[in-house]
Image (cartoon, rainbow, N blue to C red; front, side):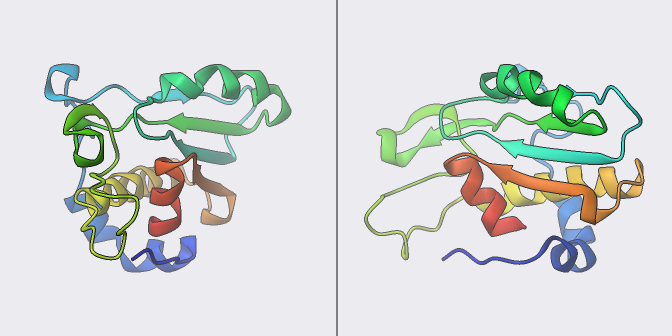
Length: 158
C-alpha cells in the first residue's frame, strides 16, 4: 500500500534511513546494473532542484531532451534525472530492465511486496539530502516527481 507524506515530514524524520539505502549511489558501475545520473545544471545561480524519476524500462537519458528543452524557462533550477538499476521484473516474465522496484501483478497490488521500493525511496532521499545539506537548497525549493513507476516512487517517498 502506498503512503503519502510531505517533503518536510520525511526530510526531518528519515535522514539516517536515507543514507543507509543507496543502491546505485556513488561509484557503482553500469556493469553492476547502474547508470550515471543525468544532471542538467542551471544557467543562473542554483536556487531550486527538480528530481524526476522515469518509468519502468526507461532511463534518465529518455527524459534528458525534454528537460533540456524547458531548462531556459527555469534558469535557477538544476534537474536531476537518475536511472533505476537493472533488475528482473516479475510482471514482465522476469525480464531484466531499468526498474525502481519489482512488480508482481497489476491486479493484486495489496499483496505485492513491491520489493526494492524502499531502496528506491532511500536513494531519492539521499539525493535530496545532498541538495539540502551540501548545496543548501531549501526543501521548499525542491520538486520530487516522476512518470509512471517513477511517479509512484515519488508519491510513496515524498
